[in-house]
Each structure stands twice: as C-alpha cells, then as structure tokens.
Image (tube, rainbow over the protein chains, first blue to last red):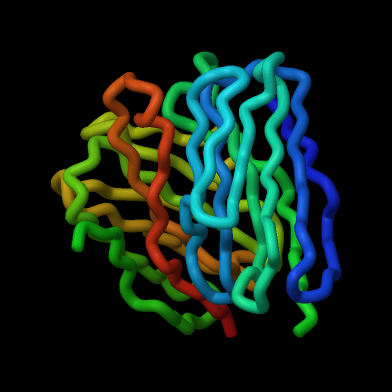
Length: 112
Length: 116
C-alpha cells in the first residue's frame, strides 16, 4: 500500500525559531493535507494543497505541494508555545478512494 | 458552527463488555470515517461509509462493527473489548464529492476508551 515518510519524528526548538518538516512518498498523490493534533483532541486541518507546485500560506504556516506530487513540506515561522503538538501530513490519491494515507507525525516542542 | 461531535469524550468499559461510541455531524458530508489512534501514532482507519455504502479495511478486527442509520449519525460498536482496544477513537467526515477538496477530512474531538 501507499506509505508516507514524515520527518523529523520530533523537534525541540526555542520560541521564535522557524520550523520545517516534510513528507515523502514513493506514490503520487492528488492532494496533500497538513493536520495539527493537540493532546487529547482530534486532528485539525491546517492547510490543503491541490496542485503540484502549489505554495499555500495560513498565517505563520506555509506548505508546498512538491512538483513530483510525491512530497510536501510545512514551514512554521516565528514559533510560539501554542504551536506545540503533533503535526501529520496526509495524502489523498486516485487509487485510495476516499481514504487518506497519513504520515507518522512530527512531535513539536517549543521552549519559551 | 458546522462540526463533528463525538460522545462521550471519555468511556470506560470492562473487558468483554460491549460498548458503543457515537458520532454526529452537522456538515452534511457524504462520507464518515472511524479511526483508532494509539499513543502519538498516526490514526488508523477502521472503516468508512460513503453514504450508505460500508467500506471495511482488510485488517480491521471482526470485533469492530459500525452503523450509519442516517447522514448525520454513525456509531462504532466494539462487541467484546480487549485490553488492546484501549485507544482514542476518532470520527471524521468528508464531502466525497469527487472534487479535490473532497479529500479534506474533518475530525471530531475523539473518544478516549479505557478497558479495565
């Protein structure tokens, strides 16, 4: 089946620093999604990408859909303590129907 | 506000005692999903409904069943919970319309299941 490799697994940064995480796959996806999950809560959709090469921002968040359709990255600028959480990438493809393939997550810790 | 609601947020059940988790949505989405998530792992899809069509994942144990009586509600039944079924159970919805945005899944807050 399709698999996503998400890296890094965890990050420990100081408040104010920029953060970058990415997902790669051996399969092509039509859609890349980025979610954030706070402890004890469900994942919240941050950014959705629909076209290869697309670069989309949401406040301090920027994500790109790789030109090969096999990768995506998420950047967070000027991190703040409330950015703490687990970030998941997810890909949707023609062969997966309504399903998403999730990355394993990046645990972000921000030190004040 | 349109949303996905899960009840209860916390559920404790005894080993082997059937339990039902509930999900409702006000988004009027066609697709509803049930995921199992264990400690900081990625959500694992158990099954989903596209309208009334039930789609089971190949590795979902028979112990897990689901019902979708109407567009708004979906239930997860665990017939005989084992200690290994303790997890966060997430419900999600999507439009399923065939457009690119149909892949966007919107999650509820989850139900934390404890098995004693």
